[in-house]
Image (tube, rainbow over all chains, first blue to last red; front, top):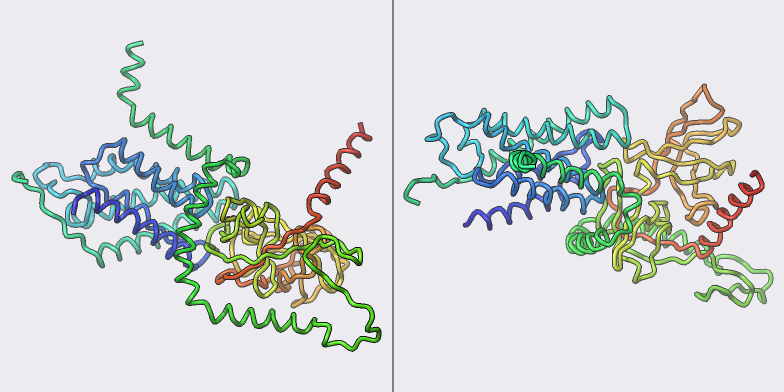
Length: 176
Length: 288
């Protein structure tokens, strides 16, 4: 399967899962699971930074149209897309010979760097999104609790997804 | 000049990021003024279509609860049938039909339309409900929405040709005028953005005697027809600093599984709104 097709399927899957599964789930007012931005985190290493920004904006906007709060996910998702290359640069192995996989995954980066990568971007996403919500309504304590609990549940969800669906990645060789 | 171009080329990604952020934030903060824009209309059409596909499947799993609600509603309507009552005078008979003015001189005030919920959330601070009826079917802004068991749900805020968006009572900007069934005093019902089972009722004076379990109903001066249940008092919080109660109201509608709803048009809404506006203008003029 080509990268393009794979990512289109992923996009549809993540948006549908977020809209019809996670947004319908009511655990607690502070605990809202988010997973859709994993689409951005799973995009190939080779994608250009501008393309990444654009895809982030489109992903966020699509979700916004479903949840009728235009702009809020788009803003947060663009931030994630903008920060992604920086975080990868910090966490990537120094010698490029180890950098042989197409996209970020526990197998490509190792569990610890991968989880740090996901955690940093998750925190960016939730802090920014909750901040935008807080500007319009709510108190500071709500903001703090919401950021922490939402980050926790999202991390839990992402780790579960990684364990349940290990992506079988093709090893990138010189011959290909 | 060359340096400017160099600067732009060097920081192009960052500038693109700032531009995209600006667009997103502009969408976010101008949404209320912007919501009639064409772009949102077609987005609403597309999400509406996808949502109604999904809802066709999802509805199947809530049929039982929906049936019970309908049955209760039918029961209450059957109780109102004229055949339930002995009539002393058989010559007087009220006939209501769909034309706005009937032969007895009654104006029709409320027109009911049925609609189906295609998407609904409760976990956001701003919950909207999407319905499968739009401006082509006669839905307009400010129409009231009532659940199939006769409990208040929300008010239409945006319509596209075939779908409409309803601001749920579970929306932090929602403020609806309600009345206490027992005393008749008017209050305002709001939501604090936290628990979707409870609303907050304010502006009820402390001279009222309020007990747990009292019914809160829709009032005359809102787009809702009067006398529909909003909820029941769950907790009385005494606010010592004012002369008004703060009341916690348990919602009558179950927002977790809305399915079939009624959209209610107030045929006199525009006249009322115009009168209110005119009065305000008149008084302002006199003051100057």
